[in-house]
Amino acid sequence: QVQLVESGGGLVQAGGSLRLSCAASGTYFSFNAMGWYRQAPGKQRDLVARIASGGTTNYADSVKGRFTISRDNAKNTVYLQMNSLKPEDTAVYYCNGRRFYYSSQYDYWGQGTQVTVSS
Image 1 (cartoon, rainbow, N blue to C red):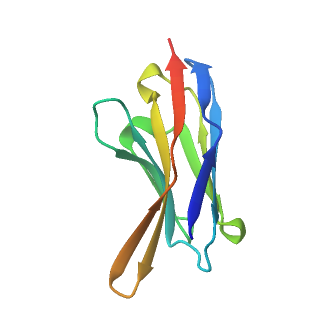
Image 2 (image 1 turned 90 degrees about the vertical axis):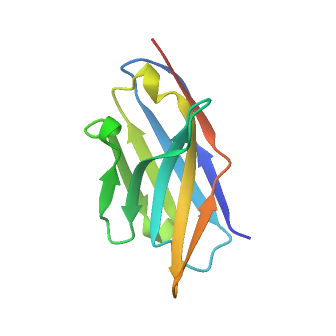
């Protein structure tokens, strides 16, 4: 059974930094893409950053220049370095692993980790 386990969330003051990690287990394949989404109370879950197996990245406009996503393909692990955090970054952050198999797309999710930024 595929599992994604996040770690690294917590409480930080505005302007501070956090590093999230997400390790995948139970897979016999490598994800085509891994990413981070976040969901604030009362809002939808939105993409924060994604990285493909080849290293191509994309970011939400709101985090460009502050967040950096990286991955270790050998370990099926993805990281999110978050700098210059703002109160509006407060949310539950979810790790996502995406696999394309023939014409189908399969998404796997972690349980989420809370990030709280105080002003």
